[in-house]
Image (cartoon, rainbow, N blue to C red; front, side):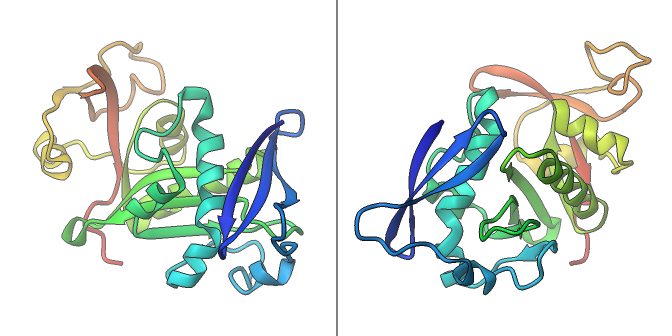
Length: 227
């Protein structure tokens, strides 16, 4: 089990990822830190099973480090998230959607993004405890947000998940360039996938350099949606 120590309300707690159960587990306080109690989190998640937009600074401070652990766990297999490298990096995002769907006191999934003013909320990271139910709920919420109030730059499995859920694709190369503010190579059709594949049937693909390597991506969702 991979263990981590996080700070919550100026106290330290141990968490670990259990590969057998594929979930993050609370392991207890460090030193003289008080035991973490369910009531501390119930004030954040009064509606069990409902996504909550967390905006209060004190509430964010209470869960920031644990949310980082969810993101870290979710991106571990691909070498980590490109921007979220430390708990403080969660604060690069000003929009936080958090879900607690089970009987324990801890968040089970998170979606974070940036409010880009006139172009709307750009979702930037997803995190879960990797249980199947948590992952599916996060995918459904990501799709729901991108169909209504947000957008995101996606590739690979997340892109396939949104395509299957009929999330709209941005197909205007000039709009893609405007949204990203970065150089891209516009392809339209996927440059390598077979035409009859899920990616081959989708129009709107472009390439851009990330760490000197081209990554093929889509922008999906509704940029500039009224919130």
